[in-house]
Every structure is written in structure tokens, then in C-alpha cells.
Image (cartoon, rainbow, N blue to C red; front, side, top):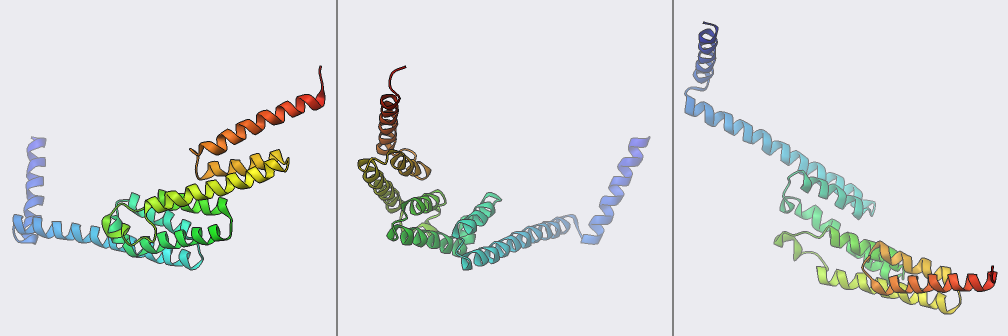
Length: 204
């Protein structure tokens, strides 16, 4: 008996809802439009917020932070192409900063910036062709930064500054962890330092 009453109540509620909307089909359509509109406004608001925040960060020369904001938006489901203007500006700003620091011979900072650009590189075709450097170029710049630091370390090594050489080569790992030349140089120099220490301390 209780189940029958519950069913009747449900039917009455449905009839009231349908009478308000006009008919079942029209009511469904109106509900879907309202739902889709709410979703659209929500995404539009989020995109506007991301654009505002990235604009603020870029005026402060914080392209890396701007890309973090954009990345969070993409992770939340916003397509890359809907953030195109902010995404492209942030990427190009970061690459330009990397180029400047490379010219200033700050190869560690430049390498880290190039690495971050590569990590955040867009995949959508409408964005990729508007980035000032392609992925191959960025990879080459990363290698150039590593080569320059390797040379700096070698100069220190030849001057007998073994720990300075190791410290210089160790910086390469931050942005080019697979760079074998620096790994081999560090290993060889550490072995040499241990041998020198044994000689200095003498037997026993």
C-alpha cells in the first residue's frame, strides 16, 4: 500500500512539472538548455578568470606561473584552443626569456626555462605554429646550454678547481638529466678527488 502511495506521489509531481513546462518533450528541452547554459557560463567564467590572471602574471614577467595557471585550466577540462591567446603569449614570453638569459651566458637559468617551455608545449595545431620556437629548436637550445656548462666545468677542472667543476656539471642535471658527458665527467672527477685525498692522507 505504501509503495502504491509513493508511486502516485511521484506521478503527481511529474505531472505538475510537465504542466509547468507545457509538455514532456518541451520540458526536457528547456531543462537541457538551462543545464547547458549553466555549464557554458561556468566555463566562460573560468576562461575569463584564467585570461585575467595570466595577463597579471605576464606583466610581472612571470611566464612560468602563467603557464601553471593555464595548465591547471586545461587539466580541469578546458580545451587548449579556448585559451589560445593566453597560452601563446605565455609560451613566447618564456622562450624569449630563455633566449635572453642564454645571450647573457646564464646557461643554467636558460636551460631550465627551455626545459619548462618544452614541458608545456601545446599539442593543438592551431597553437603550435604560433610559438616562436618549435620543439626541435628548444631541444637544441637545451643541448647548447648543457654544452656551454660542460665547457665551463672543464675550464675549472683544468685550473685544478675540481669541486667547482663538479658543481658546474651538476647544474646540467636540472634541465638535461640524460646528458651523458656531464655524468661521466662528474664520475671521473670524483674518483680523482678520492685518489688525491688518499695520497694526501698517506697510508693507514
